[in-house]
Image 1 (cartoon, rainbow, N blue to C red):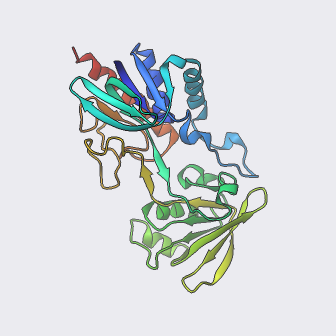
Image 2 (image 1 turned 60 degrees about the vertical axis):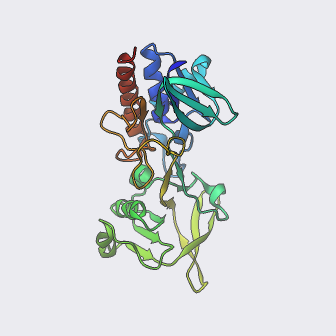
Image 3 (image 1 turned 120 degrees about the horizontal axis):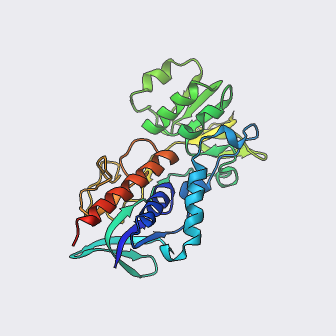
Length: 301
C-alpha cells in the first residue's frame, strides 16, 4: 500500500508529487501524461517566449524529475477511486487497482471545443482557450471571444482593456447577465454578436479570421488576430463524484489547506473551486495539497 497517490500529471500534480517525494513518502503519480495543459502553448507571430509568464521552468523541472524517477510514476488514466476501511483504492483504465492511505486529485478540466473546421489546425496558433493567460499580448489587436457565460464575458472585458477591438460571439439570443455585462455593452471597442455560431476558422500559418453564421443562416467572415474559446470548463472530478462534495459546477470543494469533504482525500488545481485557472496558482495549490497530505499521514497509526 502506498502512503500517497497523486492522480494527474499537470502543474498541480507534478508539484504535489515532487513535494511528497522530498518528504520521503512512498508515493505514486498516476497520470495519462506529464505536463498537462503546459504541453500546449500559444504561438503568435509577434510574440517572444520571454513576454509570457507561464511558470514553465518550474513545471518542466518537476516533469524532468518524474521522467527520471520511474518508480514514482504510472502512466495510465484513472477511472475511479473508492473508499476502503484502511484507505482508498485507485482503479486504472487497464483494470488495475492501486491501494493507498491518501490521495491527491489533480486531474484538471476539459475545455469545451467548437468542433468546427480549422479548430484543430490552428489550435495554439492564434486560437486558444485562456484569455486570462494571454490577454496582455494583444495590445492594439483585433480579437474574438467565443462563448456567452461568465468566463467568456470576463475574458472579453479583460481583452478590451488592451485590444483595438474585441468581438464576443454568443450562441444564445440573449446575453446572460453577469458582473461585467454592462461594462461590455458600454465599451466603445466591444461588439457583441448574439445568436451567432462559429462555423469555420481560417488562416495561413496562424488563425486570422472566423466565419460566423446567424440564426437566419447568413455567414460573415470576421478578422481576428487572436481567438479565444471561452466556453464552460468541465472539471475532471467524476472519479470521486459519488462521495466527495462538489460545487454546482462539479468542481471539488476544498478549504485553504486543500482538504476535501473526505479525510485522506485532497485536491489541487483547476479541478477544484480555487480561484483562477493559472499554472502558477496550480503549482502553489499542488504544494499545499502535498503538505496537507503529509500532515494527515502523520496522524495515522
